[in-house]
Image 1 (cartoon, helix red, strand yellow):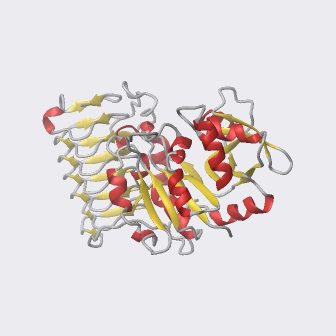
Image 2 (cartoon, one colour):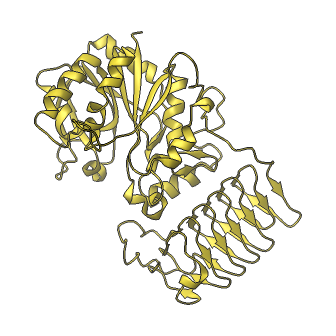
Image 3 (tube, one colour):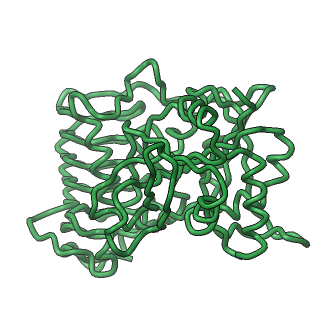
Amino acid sequence: MKKVVALILAGGEGARLSVLSEKRAKPSVPFAGKYRIIDFTLSNCVNSGIFNVAVLTQYRPHSLNDHIGIGKPWDLDRNRGGVRLLQPYKGRRAEDWYKGTADAVYQNLGYLDDTEADLVVILSGDHIYRMDYGAMLRYHQEVGASLTVAVMNVPLEETDRFGIMSVNENQQVTEFTEKPKLRDKGTLASMGIYIFDRDALEKRLRQGAAKESSLDFGKHVIPGMIADDAVYAYPFEGYWVDVGTIQSYWETNLALLEDKPALDLYDTTWVIHTRSEERPPAKIGLQARVVKSQVSNGCNVRGLVEHSVLSPGVYVSPGAVVRNSIIMNDTYIGPGAVIDKAIIDKDVWVGAGAVVGEGDDITPNVKEPDKLNIGVTVVGKGARIPPNTRIGRNVLINSDLDESSFPGLTIASGETVG
């Protein structure tokens, strides 16, 4: 195997996740209780034997930087290889904020030169999946590709969200259309996972940067390589989910609670690593009942938790009910409170007797109808919900609100507070 370096693109804003990505980059959003989204890509790297890793950050990088640190949980703090955090900056020459996925890599060509890598694996830090990059690397070398793109079939109605490819009988790419408006290009979608020969990558990036100020792999680099370079598709049939919407994020978390989930977090042959705080074991009280749920370390459950995911440090008071919900770190749920079909961010305080997610009215959120429309109510980080407040479906409670920010004790479905 040639020398390999992985570049993880982790600077995305993730605007479709509404208030969940307001204070953090999408790859830093908590997932499955104790993890963050980027943990899956980092773990895929080390489980595939790739220990030269750089994470390219931009949008609100602080929590992501704190989480990754020197990479010790992923065994990336070693003398050979390791993890680097590469952030954009304003400079006197060509340096600037990243303007497109390929531009982010272009601005870090100096780093690639320092690694002396032969092959460059470019990955997205905001998908949930399990993949052995080693198999894809071997395929790339066997077919003699300059670029290999991981692909999978997606539903026809979702093709406008992806780059769609056409291939010949040898899996060589013959056409690439980025997010086609017409659904007539097939269903073979790019997963945003690329392997480049380094020389070919540098050549194409320099050529593209001379023409485009916002250089992007899907819009500029890949279409430009098809005619002149050996571009191959690598079919992937394993688990891969884009959790970039509220619906997908909520459904993917709760799907882990099935008896035999498609993504097995308990598989000892493919461990998902993360940075874990030192917390005491979860405590289940005398009055508690926990059904088909994930309860993380440091939680104290004294009420009912059903079909839900609890991150570390969540407190569920006696008489409280949490159902079909995702509750993030250090949230307090008061006595008699009911949480139903909701996503509650970190450090939220839910007053006694409050109801979050009530009734059958699923009017889409007035301000964000494209994001909140399936009945899930979302509460931003650090909000304080007054006792006895009754909150409907598809409601957005913004971050850091205190009790005086609420207009009354009844918040109708589809409303926004803050």
